[in-house]
Image 1 (cartoon, helix red, strand yellow):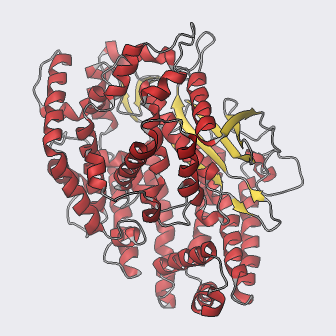
Image 2 (image 1 turned 60 degrees about the horizontal axis):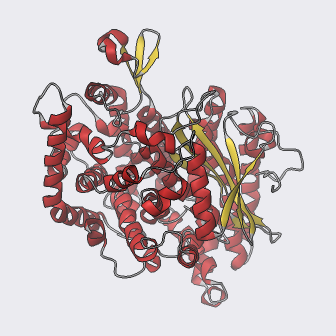
Image 3 (image 1 turned 90 degrees about the horizontal axis):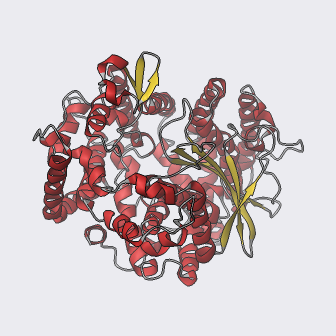
Amino acid sequence: QGPPINTFESEHNPLGLFGVPELSSPAGFKVAQQKALRKTELLVATACSNPPGALTVETFDQLSDSLCKVADLADFVKVGHPDPAFRKAAEKACINIGTAVEKLNTNVDLCMSLKKLLENKEVLETLDPDTRKVAELLMFDFEISGVHLDESKRGKAVSLNVNLLDLNNEFLNGSLLPNRIEKKALPEHIRHLFSIDGKSIQIGSLHADSPNELVREAAYKIFLYPNSSLLHCLDDLLACRNELAKLVGYETFAHRALKRTMVETPETVMKFLELLTVKLSDRTAKDFNLMRDMKMKMNSRRDSENKWLSVYVFVCRYNIDSSLYSPYFSLGACMGGLNMLFSQLLGVSFQNEQPMAGEVWSEDVRKLAVFHETEGLLGYIYCDFFRRPDKPHQDCHFTIQGGRLKEDGEYQHPLVVLMLSLPPPTHSTPTLLTPGMMENLFHEMGHAMHSMLGRTRYQHVTGTRCSTDFAEVPSVLMEFFATDHQVVRKFARHYQTGQPLPKTLLSCLCESKRICGAADTQLQIFYAALDQVYHGKPQNRSTTDILKEMQEKFYGLPYVPNTAWQLRFSHLIGYGAKYYSYLMSRAIASMIWRQCFQKDPFNREMGERYRREMLAHGGIKEPMLMVWGPHDFVSALCG
């Protein structure tokens, strides 16, 4: 076991969240942020007074690290902690630190210290490539924040950014909240399949994996029912983003967001989506016909309306009886499979570690130490896997602390949280995963390993802190491993008998990935196109009217009246104008899989190459320079 991590490097024993002594109570967030802000003042003074050189960039990275240690941690706690007082305190900390960051991004003196470095050719030539790259990235942050504006406009930019912090938080919270309906409004025979709270029923997801057609239809109508206040919030959010983008010199928010990505412009994104739609059209039509046939077979009411076909994408793709598979996918078996895969591929293994008192926020959270066979400890993964009241029904990865080379020569180990929504174990049965849950576990673990293996000098570019359209590559690649017969047969064992997953079931599982693949990709194209239009030139119509038009153009299935799917599009916050990244990342992951792992998913030589040429660089290397072979992303997705 490695030593417990203390994010704030205090000499006290860790008694608070993630080993931070101050965070033993909600009030500690105020103390933690005050410490970070005091340290920030000192570092700003240092950056502005020192002559230009490598120390300038190192000071900026320390500044970023100091603020991120509070902001990133608070970003998780505000949604993941079961105690409302902790969530509220973390939310305040996020806003306060976020406000400080926006002020720093428009600090002219601070910007000038970096500009002097970048304009001094003699000094610039003495810097190593990574330091120079980070300096350029930091300068870009200043530029898109409006540091070039006059004082009043800089103040306006800060004000808009602070307003966006509130709007982002409001929309994200609202998008994750369940909808309630009176119990008597649903047929009695399906009520027990939802969460019952007194006289009402809570519906917090689409229940797309339910075998019951009525459950899926009811969940769709209720979960996606419009919320007027959240619709107004989304309108304000998009308007504020557009105003900020125009203020700092961009045509639209999408133009600002896509600068320095692989695609560079929204026009390139739309061309990519339109070309992909044309290439997939015949296969998508066949998939829709398959979905109609499936609907007719499963739908006892025999209604012929196409509007419900969208519910059948998941049903067709996973047209397998989950109850037959779940006994073979216990959480222990799946984690063992991941451990086996990473060990053979990368020489990396997991070790359970007992958390210190107060280190975790729920007694069922598990702490994994990640070790490399020769390099030793790489970092820690906190596994928050089980459902609980008020926990978002969402699978995601949070960076708590980024890796970096510290001033004393030691490496600051990365710290991440993986949050899933799995059923807890019972006295007689372990947690059993459906095939979809198993694939999600592999996906999120891909993010975690990116954080563990991205050994960069600077935390500003560590792990998943890379171009958004590349950040999903490691996680999407893990989905290919999760549905490969060579991998699954190694770990899928019946939790009672130890028998391997039967070959017939294994074949059906691996084939299911190909069923309705075009329709599923087309659905992602629709989401990405909708995201682009929302962040393009303002339109004098509602977000629902825009959704109707884009759904008809890019998906072909009719809009279901009295629904507002856009209010569940939580990716509009972290991936605003960048949702296309999932498609781009899937294309790159597909190339990597076919070239490196399809024949032998345990190939150590390829695993080491993948780490060395991709994962290790975090955000320091241009994504296009890491993509092997010709960059035909459309063909990769249509192949």
